[in-house]
View (spheres, rainbow over the protein chains, first blue to last red):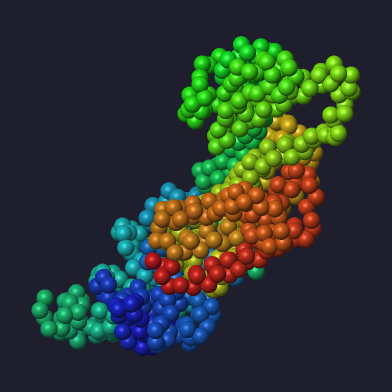
Length: 242
Length: 392
């Protein structure tokens, strides 16, 4: 479970995130939805402890990200925005490296990497160097790398950016599988369809603030609209000027 | 410590597969060092031999007044050419460098000589013309030599033993010559060895920092439950590994080239043994951590791989500065100077190549201070990687 409590973050004069609180529960997929520059990435970065909060704290399975960031990181699998992989290592070595860095023993690492390769159907390119990989192959490698230690909480920042339909579908299937095993999944997106397709819970964020949250049905009801996209626009621009 | 080694192993493996940067980093030193050695040694040796064998051109005014003197000078490879100049013209000719040395024989020369009195000659030269210095010295020495020969003959004619003139029998033994000739070579060699070493670690130091950020693999790396310092130490160590490979290759190829070229000609250690090679590698290797850590620090401040490349180039040039000072000021090793990185390595390399005993204190100082500074720089780099701006 991931809980953010009153997160604040400024970069110089710009307030990127202002008083963001949210909860992502186990066994559910939570979507962080908002336009570009709304503060989604900054919020996620604070959750996965790459950025420090100015005030507020995040709790990963009840562990404070600020006070014990290493322990918190151990419980998270993270796919940052535009995550790159090492071009001169094979997909398997990329995965293996992160397994080792997560403290897995070498034998366990190899076993877990093999499992991930099977789960994500990567067998045909697993032992090739990553430099010629397609976008979809790179995403699979980065995902496998993020999940190699079997984390309870999974954070993905705009994971579907630049992916074709088939790759998006693979990702969606994987997220649903992980959800079925009781994992807590939090991912950000600016694409409505994506969020409505898989999310149990949606947090709408704009200009660094949470403007709405609830299940897709609740959001539709609250905005008085049958269409989630309409509801999204409604929350971003309540005065209806758009 | 375990994570440092995991990072180290991965970086080494990845960079061994990157053929292009590997080849450019390692071949540079392996090929360049021996080429440079051969070229420099040959140039130096030829230059000094030329100095001894070169004939000197001497303009002589009224040479017909002193035929014996001129014949004597010609024996010692002085090319005399007749010139018709008065005093003012002779001065101007030397000042304008038409001639480097002008010898004028006054009209009373022959009369004085025949009467056994001091015979006057005028020697025009310009002491501010550095290139003419050795020519003038040779002419002057030969004139003195001729004069003392005449004096000896006169004494013998008068029945006096000419040895009464030689109160002191001086033998001039110049021990400095061969080594001083090699100072330039030794300095250049140290620079090349140190630069080659740093070059070897350059691609990996950049790739592990600026490159990793540019590829977008830095952020995922920072999400693993490992302290950032440990990640950085691993990367710095990996750069050190490549520096050591590059250093070993360049020292070995230098040793082979020096053996081939003939070390005795330039007054260097003729016994270029395996132990000397190992000592050379060990004394330079102490500088590797400092270089690698500085590169990592610089890369942390830059925005892109390209920008990092530009600045890191400066670090490669850094070791040359103390060496330039050392050669200009003619510095000799002292306790304090042995604490200056690059400079102390220069003294160590020079000492080893000349087969001079290197004091244990100096060696310890050189190695330990360089390593200590390297550790401090690595620590600073580790601190820097906590900056949030790092993610770009």
